[in-house]
Length: 228
Image (cartoon, rainbow, N blue to C red; front, side, top):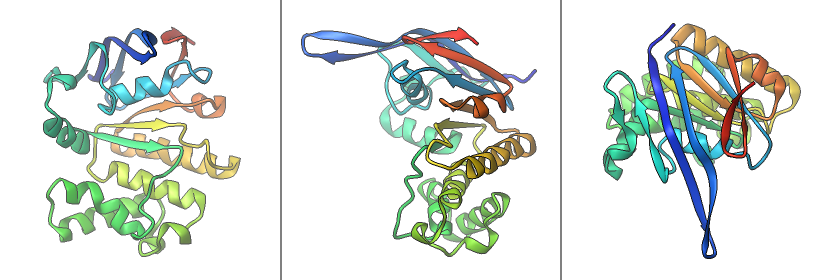
């Protein structure tokens, strides 16, 4: 059993609607161990994506804390600049839509987090080339997104997410925009990366086929986590 790499402690999130507050997360507690894989399932509106965004330091909770690694640092005690740097270095993100920059090549898209972190261009290129080879795109590094298939675009997004070698990858409906064959290939790739790089994976998904590939499955209902 690995050490806990990311932990939610009684996380709550509400949004204001008119004069009232609408709860989306209701005191969610969750531990993710290093090198583990976890799927969170649930109906639309259950709070899955909101939880992922809070865990990934993209959306501030209204209560509770999110604690990272052995240092036990609470992400939401950081100021915005420190949080941005932390997120870039330690958390990988892949979404249903790849959000690649259309004017940049696969190489340039994959390099982006390293350049943001202040790496030299040559260092960033070396690492980007390495991860693009890991995701099976050695021959496509100079292609722009429009020249790539949907599955290849998602592989570039995965390469970008792991270029800093983060200890955890957060995936939101990763295969939701892919056909079944490309979805299977992307999931095969994720499991391979989990096993070879020991990256923990948290996947929010509607797809039971995706969930079955994970070590552990939890269900979210009405802002609360249930054991599936």
